[in-house]
Amino acid sequence: MTFEYTGRLDDDGVVFDTSRKSIAEETGLADAQPQREYGAITVEVGAEQVIQGLDEGLVGLEPGETKTFAVPPEKAYGKWSDERVQEFETDELREVLGGKTPEEGTFLEAQSGEQGEVIDVDDDLTRVDFNSELAGETLEFEVEIVSID
Image (cartoon, rainbow, N blue to C red):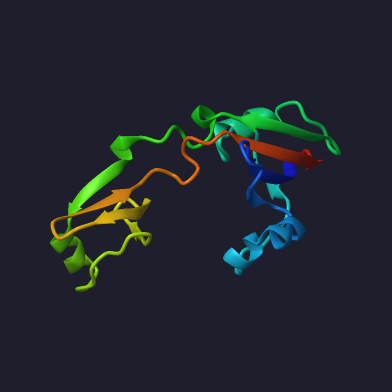
């Protein structure tokens, strides 16, 4: 199935992702991701290529059809969890960063490839949040089906 989409935060309507270049330009997403290419995406429905709630929302739709639906955190990026916040010795992170002290608001990549945001730094410990920035959020997707392959 090939479709266009716009994803918004359900509570305030802020666009967090879209396949449409015009919406990305209107909302400033295009400036934040200048190398990104926009356009319809193709997925195999049920093959877990997109988050569960989006996958489920696509079932049964036909070409030309437009649908807007909400996706709860459990079927999106999960609930925010304290367990996903990890502590590291600041000195060890400094060594990994080539002598630079980690700074709040910067992102680090774990050996697993996960991205985490540095949320607190002191002389002894640095806390890194590996929760998705969309964790705990109910998402709203507006989709338009382009074709079914």
